[in-house]
Length: 387
Length: 206
Image 1 (spheres, rainbow over the protein chains, first blue to last red):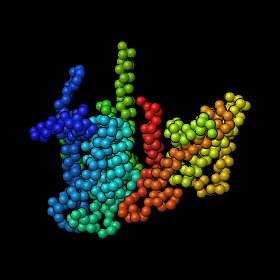
Image 2 (image 1 turned 180 degrees about the horizontal axis):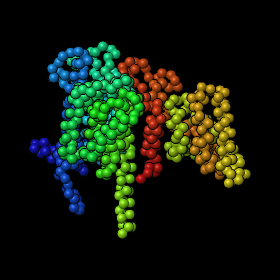
Image 3 (image 1 turned 60 degrees about the vertical axis):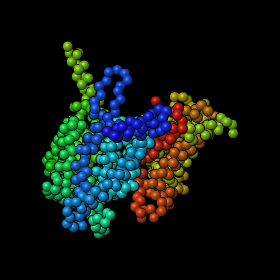
Image 4 (image 1 turned 45 degrees about the horizontal axis):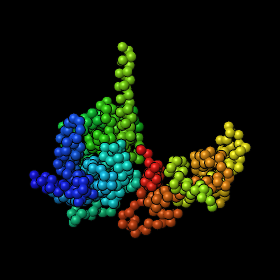
């Protein structure tokens, strides 16, 4: 525990009246990030759990790791597949690693810088919410997204979706999705279409420069423009298909989901009802929908393609922006699944609707909670009158 | 100019700006600010209309029966809006096409009715003129600020001239498409309000 000793030794410098008092919140942020604070309550009787929000955030980051690692491999796999080169596992992974790493670094540096500056400025503790958002953002964009656009999007979402509402825990919209939505609406050419999903140039001498005009559509993008749905194959489940970095592999996301459910961090009610909502809507469209490829696509394909699973597991269950009441979680999740499929099927401009569905339902989550609570109040009031 | 008049003219331009303090005229601020030129024309039109209708109403204020004052105000504003609209059609046709219905909709701009009701009905024509000009310019200032940012970042141009050099585009710079959509204008107005509240702390809500 030498690190702990070191931190304890330099701590007085940062306390009231110390030399480095101005950097108190930075120090505090690092200290509580590394160790569970041993501060006790000053008044009243309180029970502190060892699991504070920083520990929860770390758990979510761990749950995201399989999706990230697989995503890196897939970025390399797609690149070498497009280049027509046969490669072993490690070169592919290394290529993907080099392609994705700068995006993680930019996302964290920009986001955390803003968080630190705001915390210093407002004399608050540094909050930890960005640990997860900053990790998710690189996973939900294509690996070709230019870094400066990513930096602007992260800055925009941290400032306008989070800090102006009061920081971590006060945002009503999912911060990571706002970053993606910003890119989606401000720079649509880098996040949609056929040309962005596969890295088309060599990185640090690895890989090959693909010919100009190389395209590879996502399966959903293909289906939106063609007469028949892309046929189902196991790669859609393993995740060896073009797409945003972390969203392709159902298996890797399922590993993360298992961890989140086991630790109780994500609500199984939300997660489960997103899938139910999606499947029910697809079945309805299969029966009664328009006669298009995407409406006729079977439900299992709808679920495994695009960001549906990733959104259901990591975004819809965000405890800050989702509904808080237990019944509300079912409604909230169901509506997300439903709206996502409706956007996919009925709006040919947007082959993927998960982002928009979650953001839309984020806005309605407080209303859902309000209705659930009021319904309960009314029920109980009625019961007391009847007596 | 007397100090009081100076205040009547100057206060609405920033300190008591109709858009960022009273949150009036937001709809047109979102709708016409994708480019600088229509924003300036819109701002000037509103300035002229507010100033003149303020003067007219202020002259009539003692003869207007209280119960029909809104209708009288509307008639005056409608007449002025029609005149401005016709002038624009005659002398700046392309801008008037760009502004389309929003010139006509000046009649529903809350700034107008607000100034007529709150100021012109109680004050003389000279003060009313200054108040109208001040409020119109305050509105125009916000429009121009928003339009400047939107056109610069959304299209890379100012007044239709290329400002961001081709060199930047060759090196991967892209215009921000969201700047051309109204939601971004609302966020920009929000930023201006943010700056304004940082300066006038007594306006901050608890």
